Length: 80
Image (cartoon, rainbow, N blue to C red; front, side):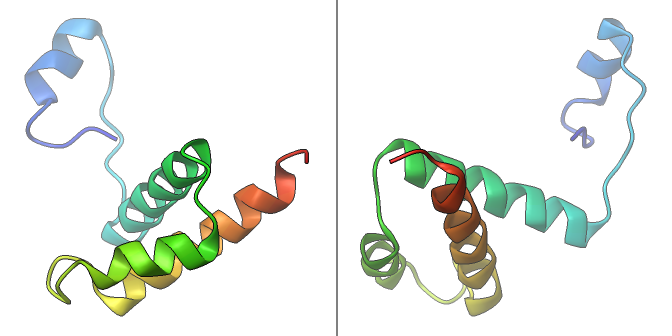
């Protein structure tokens, strides 16, 4: 993902920016959040507790649902 903050760097590195739609970007960010949660060993209940600490503006229901959906997928792929 390259946005306006990284355009200069991308050009210098020879990367051609391929902007994502806002929906694709939100999905990618949710997947990253889910991967980090899994790396920390958090389960779904712990994630829900964490989400309660955020205001609705900071973490709305759509984003938390995206994260939980990705987390379920990641956990299902992680060997026990």
